[in-house]
Length: 400
Image (cartoon, rainbow, N blue to C red; front, side, top):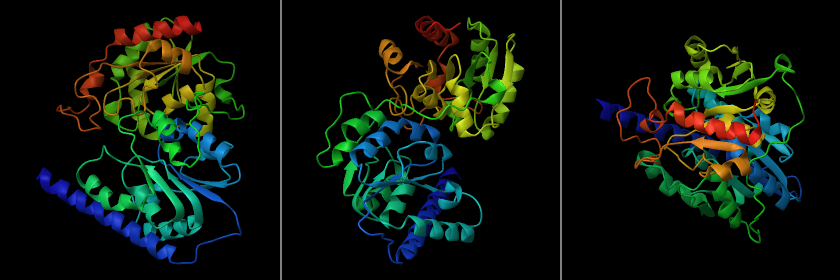
């Protein structure tokens, strides 16, 4: 039965991508919009906050190198418009754009109209998305002198089968393997640009520069932030361990702020019931937008969370942080540094992990994970290990 369901799901993926491709093809049959000799670049990167933040320095570098080009950016994140790296934002509803919710006819119409908006002629298209074939199929019908994307060597099954023929649309494919996505950009991706000289000034560490907008309800309050969730529940450290850490961490900070997305509200409520300490809990899970989240994290004494976008935000804002990391995509997103001294001095960040032989499984866990559990590589991380990392962070940054 499982094999039959898997086969049906694969067929549905193929049909969905085929319909997307056909929609773009017909939308692209109209004349490409041109406005004189304008030079253009399109950057594709959507979905997760972490993916956007990890590549901040790459956007900055592209902006600096292509100073005479108009840079377009396709995204679903409103925070992108707050930066100075892009001339125009193509804001999309990715659920409708990639046929993930709503009626099929409605999605087709939405995608047709959206494709028409981005149907320009570009000097470069940079596909910085690594998650599947969606953006590659979108790139296929766009027109550009150079199309550059990742070589998805880590995909398998139907994704790999689809990837082989469609990836030929790229003029350059970057092989990053399991290298951290930021390092891959520094060492490989930007080298696909003629005459580009690789920088050695560590520009590639993410840094977010935005106007100061303090979150009013936390103004003048002393607090630290916990991010209990992630986009993949199997990447979440055990809730009771987070609660025990909060009870045992030696800090005078009187308030714990919980931050996260709307689909993590139940986790926040469970934490409030589990926590037996004396600190006040301010639960903001699902109650803030991205720009408010920048203020909340940016003014925190310190931050602790899973391998997820908010944790990248803490690094980008230079907030002392701890990331609890499993092995599914180890060293692709976190850690920025495996060595504690390097992590503290370069990113104000410490990563907690317990390496096993099955690291870098790319979510194909070899263990039978039971409902309510995380990956085994996360389950074996102890509170003692996390507290030891916290003591290092506390000592280095004089956290009270």
